[in-house]
Image (tube, rainbow, N blue to C red; front, side, top):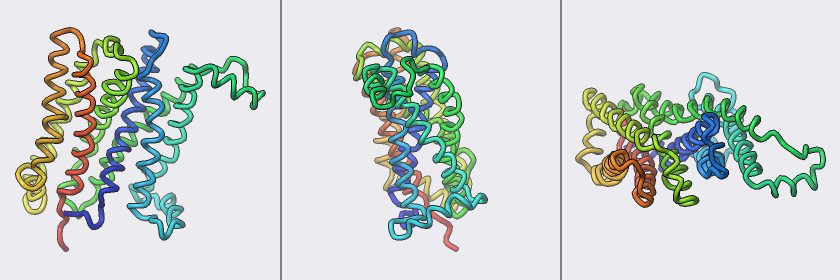
Length: 311
């Protein structure tokens, strides 16, 4: 295993980075589609916009301290911005732009939902207009942020896939898997869990949500299978990694914390929702929780079950 160089911090970063990007994507799509304005209060937008910045910020701090800068040599962080031949540098630049954008977007969403807060701020910043064009600037930031969110979600997979010393990771399928998982966990957190808890009847607003979830879950299952089949076909240490996940020490986590809660259970729940033409309250919340938990442990397994080539 590769724990010596790629510790648990990177697994948590991959999870938080992907879910943060997925949460922003969910909020941005709800914004740009106009769905946000069909109701007086849209918790999906508020939660998706509010959590994306903090999730990405915490994940990025973990990434920096785990992959090069460290607590002992913080000055090395500056060099991570200048080595443009490094995938790490590309990611740092994307995150450096995307994280502030997420915080601004979340702040605008908060102010628009709670006008009293904006009025209180205007008492100190009198140059602010009495009526601020929140919708205009949110839509601008949402459009820009979607591109950065897609780049961030893909980057979490590219970060591993370019490591040639770990054959299990070294496949172009991995970034696609992380992108689909990011979208799925983002929807699970912002809609299935967060928005439903904030406003229990919210699940009735998204008639197409079960279909979208089933497509995402199905795509994720196929991509997981593709990664495992490609790795197994390589033989050697890549095949050993597959065995570790499917039948070795990682098997209980893979089957018990990834496949069952993140694929089988939510697929059945959403298939039932399509047939019943509505989503159950607790089934939706538990489905979202299962998807989020599975997203974390999928990345954990991909990091910890991987075996490097011994040179």
